[in-house]
Length: 245
Image 1 (cartoon, rainbow, N blue to C red):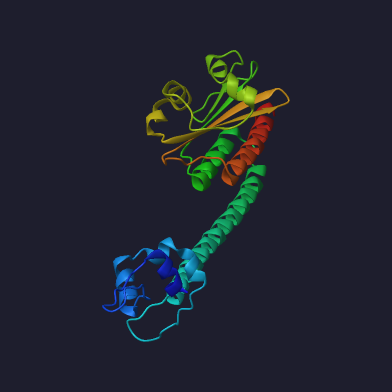
Image 2 (image 1 turned 30 degrees about the vertical axis):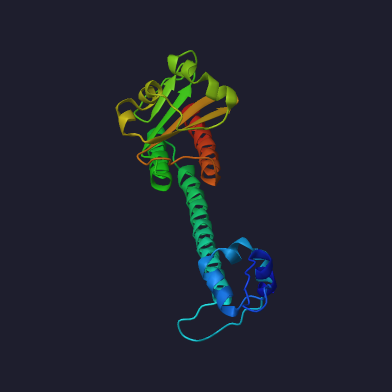
């Protein structure tokens, strides 16, 4: 097959001293041509489907079959690595869900606001690398201010600054400006590499949960963010009950 294809591509003419006529190219001329045109089979890939190439098992010999096996091994190795990553991720998610369950069991018996905010801070720091946490509640009747928890009026500058996030009612990942970071985290603002804002509203009760991390790109769209929002909402509901009581 390669022989006939070669005839169409290269027209080698051998001149006979007695007869001036075109003859078939010799094996040497074909070998010479292929050596000089190493891309011949690459440029004519359709030939590979038709040529029968023997699989030689001698040392220092390689074949298309061996190359094929090498590719399959590489693909298999990649699949195994992806499977291990998926298995590890699945295991980590399972552990995290168990820790969330334990967190709520532990927080169920807490009846003090200060103690509860410390418990929430410890949980987010340990399982989400959120070393900085601030909870802002907007209410015109209640008054409270500690390091991690502050109650602001609904007409305060802080509430006005974050009107849009309450309108969208969706978490905001690492999109804060310097002024906003400083207002939320005060002197800790310069240490924060990534941040997350979670607005929580329930029956007129408004809370803004601000999380900060020393790690870059710690917060992003995905399962972890969904879990963060879920935990944050339940934590805020518990906090609301403690404040009202």
